[in-house]
Image (cartoon, rainbow, N blue to C red; front, side):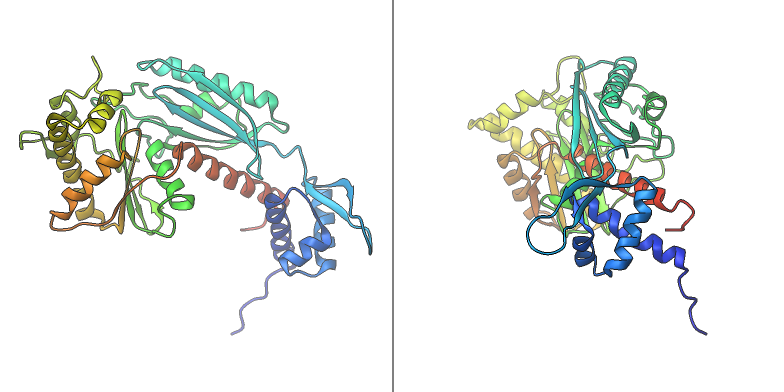
Length: 380
């Protein structure tokens, strides 16, 4: 039995998607350039461009080719197609951007937060940033991608408060906060998961489909990437390692977060790691600092060995404000070589990886939204 032939509408939809995707990668192209790059005939591309012009998704820029031969018109995505909001919520503040389908940034807003700002202050900062960017974005904010330095319930997008979490914003609900400003979906995940995606796509874990990303900063987190996908768990709480039991400085088993209390490496009146003090320990050359580094490597090694046993990664990536320090990486590697199983350990490569990962997803989602607008009834 012969397979059914694709319908004319489907073929047109696929051609239009090729044209749109190409224009998302280039500021402007002629129909001849589009035909050459896609391998689709010039008449078919011309028909597609005409359809997309009628749908107000593509515009003639008014620019023309120069030189010998037939003059060609340059086409680009229509400027009114809107942008995506990208936001990062950290203990230090909210950073928000508006990005278009070509990945260009149209404004950035930074709003500082106090360490224990709370849910209301964080919500107000996120909402204020979105309103400001929406006023600058032609076509408005059509979707949002949010990174949060807290666990995220995958079903609702609300932040989840766990015991002893250092960044206390309660059950902040980014989709609800952005409902009046963003016209489309709001995707929320925690910062460590976004950082892992960024390292996988453009960082030190490219082409590594199975790895563990360990975040060591004011807070402690982990992302598990398996078969190229971040595994979020039933509620989105996979990788929450703060209460995983490991070896304390005196050899007793204790929760990972309690190791820093035992080593006097917490901020005053907080469960957050005292990053400046810890970096001082990593830089120091005395015997006391060496003992603390060994205790940290032992505790971190216990966490990573648990991850190795459960997920079988190809490599481990360590990031965060103190996690990628060369002395710590060396100490972890030395500890790992004495364990029954070990894998390569490397320092994260990207600055602000959580924002990079969220931005890439926002551009991809906005592109897909634009493609669906060309043929809303076609099954992609």
